[in-house]
Amino acid sequence: MSKYRKVYHDIKTRITNGILIARQELPSESELMQHYGFSKDTIRKALSLLEIDGYIQKQQGRNSIVLERHLPKPQMLSEIKTVGELNRTSSHQIKTTLTSLYIVQGEEELMRVFNVNEQIDFYRIGRTRTIDGENVEYEISYFDRRIVPFINREIAEHSIYHYLESELGLKISHSQREITFRYANEEEENVMDLGEYNMVVSVTSTTYLSDGRLFQFGSISYRPDKITFASTAVREAKS
Image (cartoon, rainbow, N blue to C red; front, side, top):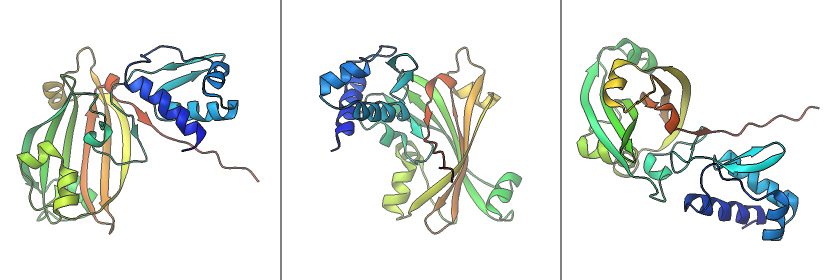
């Protein structure tokens, strides 16, 4: 393991184990250099990776601070992961509850997205996700029944992706996502613990198999204070 990753994993472990708590300042770069016995460049690489992964926030002219952890790991926009995979450390109590499961066809948006006629039908699945006792996520997913012919409550409340990959042998490739901030609709207000919030963060996705087939379309609505997204932006070198 590289030196900066050793520093990264050590600080991350201290954060996830509660030794370093939210809003606490980390030691200065000089103090970290002395503690780990590594160069300033190594320490800065480790801190940059911690910031990218949503564990800390670097501050100009001040020490980095630990961020609050609403999910065990921020959702990387470049990755497709289930909540179970995000919660590998089991540091949060997470429960998925099926709220609706039925077959639909002839819906205009689905026909447009999947480029099909009204004869093709889809599973419509509604699920809430409770994190540490609060309903803070609501998911609506549509699955093409030509590809996913069967889903029941047990599958929906455990892991649909695990079922698709392990039981059906499907290879999930990539997802196109659009993130919006909007007022909560009536359905979301009824099933989510929004508290003082009247808005949600909505992530709409179209997800494809490795052979290019679109098999899932839907959205997940998050209470704004309970989700962190992380991304890495690269600036191209100018010639």
